[in-house]
Image (tube, rainbow over all chains, first blue to last red; front, side, top):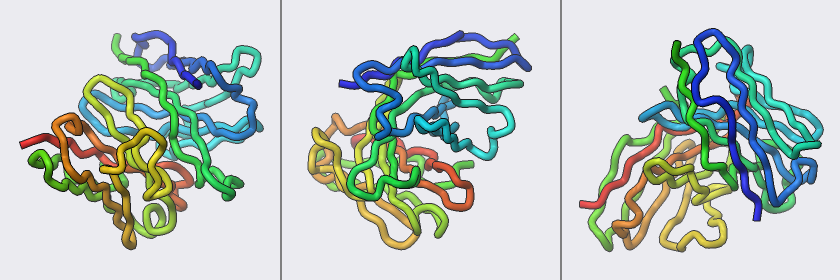
Length: 128
Length: 110
């Protein structure tokens, strides 16, 4: 059974870069059958999509975060990583990683994938 | 401000049917599948509905999804106190080339 575990600093200073890892067990990030994604949830608010990555390295980012976000994979560690630069208090949130699945034959585009498995999340606070 | 619009709250009496709406436009709900997630306080979201109306294994058939035009709905039939949670809708947006979420709906028992 696949499990995802987020990890990283719980406190980041304003203007610095937030770095998080998502360790995947029970599946390979290079299986070729899934996308992997990051989602965040500010305190008391709804979910916000950050971005997706496929094993080819193809990425899709939220336009509102695109200039500050990088998602990449480390196949040797079976991890998906997130970097968010120039953080402010508005980036304070619980950050989740997720595995995106596709059901059925139309799996040739990212638009047919859905967030099927989620990690438990990790809380990141941006404060001096 | 979320791209998809959900009512902030909804409530139901045990045994009753509860419906949650999710409103979008032709770039997202109108042209793509919708997912629904259930989230308990302090916990990670859990997939409830995918491809607008499909249930993952293990999700009770009391939960059902539907779509009409640019709006989607999640229905909980035979509502139970254990269904008290936040529910979030999501869809791909062709104009933004990304996933958009609703603001979430908190469902409580009366």
